[in-house]
Image (cartoon, rainbow, N blue to C red):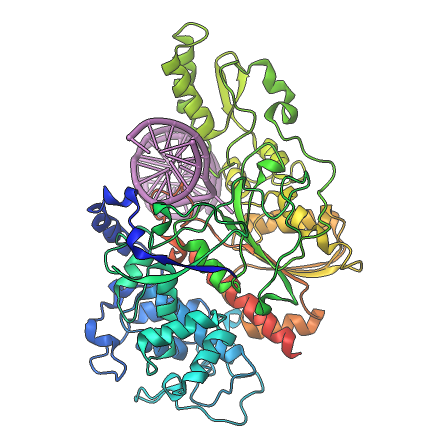
Length: 604
DNA sequence: CTCACTCGGATAGAAGTC
DNA sequence: GACTTCTATCCGAGTGAG
């Protein structure tokens, strides 16, 4: 991992200078959203953050329940809220995951004091029973401090030895040791682990920080403008993308330094040899089993990929535009621990231009439409009125149309991925055409409403791209794989493995949408001989159940999934709230489940 | 500065169901 | 006729590159 030190003096990016006032509006909108519970619900005052509990505001039942619904025991949530004070939802999630990592780490002694308390038998739904959090057979031995005491002398504070804290942050949470050391020097040796973790995150995303609640504003999407509170700070900068950083002009100095997107966005390597990075050094905790593969939109708000990467063992994302695999762009980031050598593409190689994919389109394609590939296939399509406006604009002028009309029509065509289907007539791609472009078998989504088909396809993998990355598994698992598929959608991962000729012995699939589950099940029954187990809610996949599945099937070889992008995608005008958004926060379940699988498989 | 691109959401009204 | 479900239509801004 390469780091460099950058001077904050150069941190003012020009685009932030012109709209500073807008931040207030944005923050107001963000706080009013239904994202993860934040301080606006509990409205704790400044005094609630103190460690001794004086003036602690008791969290509301609804805010507690949100986290309980995510799979955290209520006691753990209450404790985390208490420790977190007014640091906001972002910090709270991290703290909860910290506790959970503690509970799942067999190397960490857990006494009655740890947050790993058994979940009270309170759930009405048996399927939603939360497992005991201290069932890892590691309870004997050292006893920790008492967790549920009214005193705040909890386990975190008991770990007063600085070495233990550093060890903890490095080994359990996976922070780089040098950053942990810097955080200790910033915050002092008495700082709690949660404060140190906050500080490290803040140093990565918003400059030096220690116990300053402004961190959350700086770190949140649309939050306070950067550079407001960190004058003179120096901080570490991380290089992403696995490629050399060229110039480091003034634009490099933003506080929330975006993860560099490679240009061309070709990932580590491509079948055509455009790039050929075939080796990399994975961080120790990232090395399997199991293999894992995570996907999301590349063009996420600032800081999102940095945080995702941090949770997923500091692995650099592989940013790939699927335009190198098919006739439509699809800019996505993939974090995985798969080997890079001996990748092979799916055959037949899909057409990479519109005309090759849809030869009929050439007939009506005007010479002034230069598109040869589609833009990203999305979940919504143009309305009929929109198409009619385009038709009228073209019929009411000469041929070729004047530049203004051309620009208007081209803009709409690019925005909505329209194809020419007649004289002056454009239309959206049909669902089966999207299936083709995305690498799915014909009629894969047929049978559900048109709107649902567009939505499901717009949310899916590009199969050829994913299959290229997964192709290295074929020789490694000649007798088949057991797969944990999270946020399966219409089964892009499963289709990719199938098309690679990889047998799936067991697939545990988690997908919220019933129509998507039906699509996957239907395809599975037609093509597979293995066992498919479908689960509707990722929140019900507790570590207890994961362990039961692992004992039953012998372990998972691959954990794969792309968590919801709703709150990350640029098309979302209403709730682009970042990783803490209502849907996109489910990423933390991916991390939770992956951690659980690794821990259980390491133990059994 | 301009330009290009983006796995979307809220709403009203239509259509379907009982 | 009340209710639910489905469909069509409308709605910019964040971000990076040049």
